Length: 318
Figure 1 (spheres, rainbow, N blue to C red):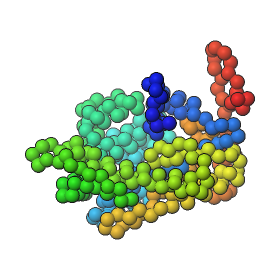
Figure 2: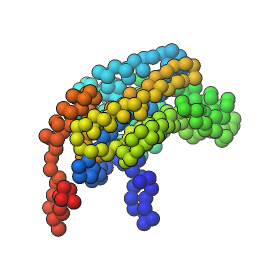
Figure 3: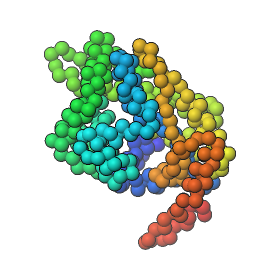
Figure 4: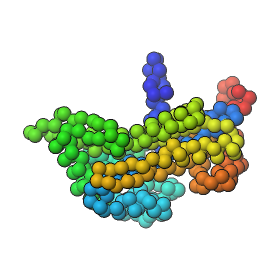
């Protein structure tokens, strides 16, 4: 579903919150059908790859890309540790602190020129109350940490839009910007332009992968979330191994930048019977996937039962 229903209820399922308490509870309600399992494929830090790709393509500075290629480095963790001046272990993915998540949101807010007011509102939607003044400080620290975002990436986009009034994503899709005026504040137009190449390219890459999947194995894709796809397949080892191989092929695509830089966006896979409760496939070999699936099944907890009202039948009975 991409729209609310005619009664005004419902949700755009491409933008289900992941980090708020309500969002997590809602995602727990999205379950695979009996005898089936979800296999999800996510483009890892896709927009960050493309932003750093533009910086490397324009200047030859591959520092950001090198960090992204090194899977032992958590860029969000490093950024959060710098912004909040706390040890890196307090910003770890598994740490029970908000530092890493806010660091991750800061990277995208700063890259796309988001203001402190908007940034505070975005964080509030995810359950984090951060005053505007603190958001101003956080964004300033981000640009201190990554000066090339403003000096290279944003400057490149501003020049392209100012000179040509158009931008092209890495698939050739064009967007025109006719609202620029030499004697007005063009900040809003530039903010829209900053996000165009990364977001449009990632969305087009996902769309191209879905087209390939539908032509090769129609009917498996059940959900698309901008940089990821969710497939529902038979709950057996051979089916999971086969579909992960298909996903690897679907996203095997080289993206070319204006000055010749080439890269492929990496992907990762997760399995789960519930959209919220999943397990990551760190090893996508046949043996690794079978071990991951067996591990997940052993750890799978039974469906919670309601504590009041009429007792509902189990999912297997349904």
